[in-house]
Amino acid sequence: MSIKSMSFLFLVLFCLISQVSAYSSDDIEWESVKTVTLHWGDSYKVDNYVITADDFNKDGYAYITIYKDNVYMTAGALKLSDNVVYRDTANGDDIKVYASALSLKTDSWTGNLIDPTVKVQIYRRGLPDLEVKLNIEKDSYDPTRLSTPRFIEGNVTIKNVGDAKATNVVLNVDTAGLELADGKLTQTTPSLEKGETTKPLAFKLQIPLLWDEEDFKIVAQAAAIDINNDKHVFNGTKTITIRPKSEIILTKSCTGKIYMDQTAYVSLVVRNTGPYALNSVLISDIQTDDLELKDNVQTKKTISVNAQETTTAIEYTLKPIKPGKFTLPKATAKFTVDGKEYTFESDAPTIEINGPYIVLEKKVNVSSFNPGDNVLVTVSVKNEGNRDANVKIEETVPEGTRFVSGVMTFDDVVNNKKPQSFSYVLKLEKEADMKLPATSAKFVDMEGYKGEKVSNMPEIALKVASGQDTTSDGRSGNAGSSSSGKAQASSGTSDEVGQQPGFEAWVLVIALIAVMKFSRKGQN
Image (tube, rainbow, N blue to C red; front, side, top):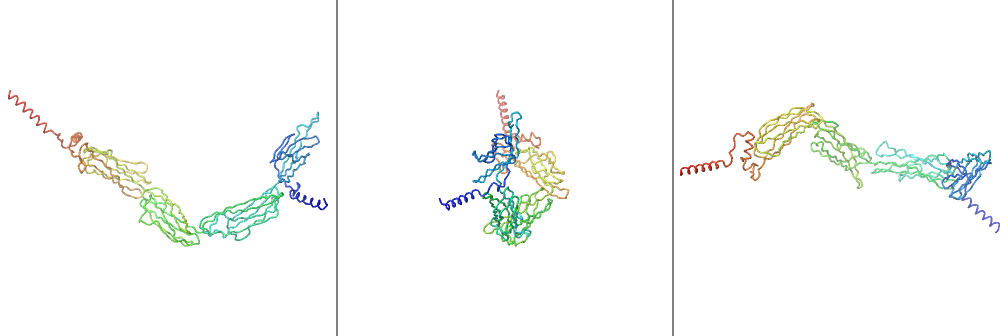
């Protein structure tokens, strides 16, 4: 082989070796992993490496062997402050073992070592670690508000918080489609030492005008090369919210507190916060069962609202039905753009209604009767409101009945903690189904609020005996039957005692028998 050929071969080999082993152990920035004390024969595992204290001698040496994946890599006889390094030229998984302390006591009689130990610090090749800080001025942007900035302003800084230098640090900012208004979105830094921070990369982004609220995830990505020519990628992210360019603010307000004899005023105010006019905005309000709408006002209305305009869309009044605290339903504003409907809701105001609320209930103790039967009538008086009231009741004796006993008047203060009642007995004399009249009560409270309430009307059916026909007015065809007569006799209230059916026939039979007996005696 000629000298030129050999020179060329050595040059190729040198280039190959240089590419594989681009740095020496002296160039490595080490990261401390663990400090351990090893006795004679002890081992300690770090990642794929095993460090073993194979031997000691009295001259002050500890023999350390390094294995990787159970394969011998290198060894060294370490005195205090010595180290052994294995340079992994293939993968860059370099490791260093440093002897920080030795214990080599000997037996005075035998001269042998007594439990020798070595304290070693284990290092591996340090790596760069880039902290990417992406700073955005605000978390959300609302183009409809004057206080919102004109642009989305941000900046990115990179700090090397790792254990080795980073080179060729390239930064790219992904704006998630937001348009750059000013500044840059890329930056290259030749090298970044441990603890060093790059200059800020500043930028401004346009605020888009959207019909729907949308989130944008901005990503700042930094890529760097380490001493082994390995690439490392690091990210910093920030999500911002862009509000719609037009928004309806619908405010529903209501009188906060009223009395039972007052009315509540409700209004719906619409504000278009955007820079564009909105046409055909449908305002809808839902009514509650707790209050009554007065004057049949329409609670749906279609309006147009100019940019930045505020207008009152609907006004109406409500009449209370009963006392209490109630939450009114939310109203809605809807409009359609490009075939898509947008809906905005109002708040749900509350209203407090004060006053008494009298409830009457009339009961009877029977469901059917015979003429002459007694019935017990009970009237219950309750106040379901939040104010006491004086209640007055004067009952009258219904047609077809007679008063027997009890109390037919009521005059007392009734509150919501204790219902009250009174009772009386009536005799039912009508020979038909009966419907008792409603009880009427008048009330007044300390505020001067007064009113009148009526009860239900209990019904009692006339009993019909088995096999009897019923007339069109509901009376039995033999209302003067023995069963009725016995009931009247037992009650002791009838003016006349009814005759038994067939009485005259029995008298005639007895008279005939007497005549026949007298005739026989005359013949004898």
